[in-house]
Length: 289
Image (cartoon, rainbow, N blue to C red; front, side, top):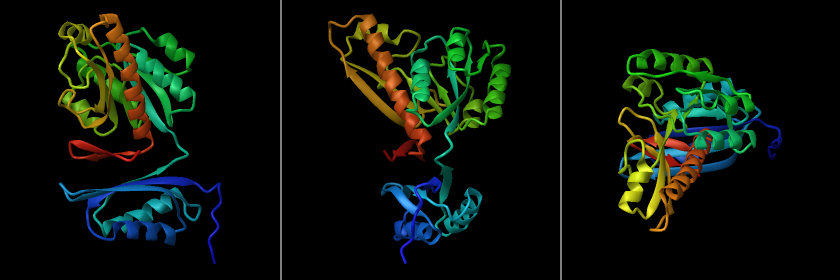
């Protein structure tokens, strides 16, 4: 007798990594079938360099609750020494945005969110400046102004973390937040904080990178989205892109091109993370698009 799957069945995403061995895909698909799951999307990757196996499976299942599935998958995963997570697709990812005085990435993310293009739930905006409180209000998002100085950095980060945890944020986005996070805060946010860097290769550092790029006559303007780590701008890379430039471009042209690229790259990184398509692989990432 064939099973009938209701189109209204809850859907889940299972992500996992483990030491590679034969039969993992067969075992996972068999397990899901035996427990009433109907696979809708699946992707896997074998990293021959590290001997690790990565997999992302989206499936529908109405036989068990989320809690029951979590328990059963936990028992199953022990056999393969899996690191795994189970996510309900009906729940958008709780997200907090951090910003300073450049609002292009913030504005882009808010618009995409309200347009239904990002599966996130933006619950708060935190800034060390007051510039965007009206923008936050227009989207009905709580705005928290937390000034940061060298003397108050520890207290400011404690307030930020209190808000992040209080909102249940599974994702923190540094949407051009121009403060270096402490090692402690980076550890607290490991694997769930995304930053956008203004260069394809971080050769121009400081407050005016596009002026430096213009002086050097660059031919590519780029952006890199990566996870935040204690090593500044060196976390695992999620997405990168570039735009062509030539001698006719002014500093203002390069700045505008750079902001567009930053916004697009960050939006893609946020989308893939919130769809549970990004798996950490040491200092690198595996992305199932």
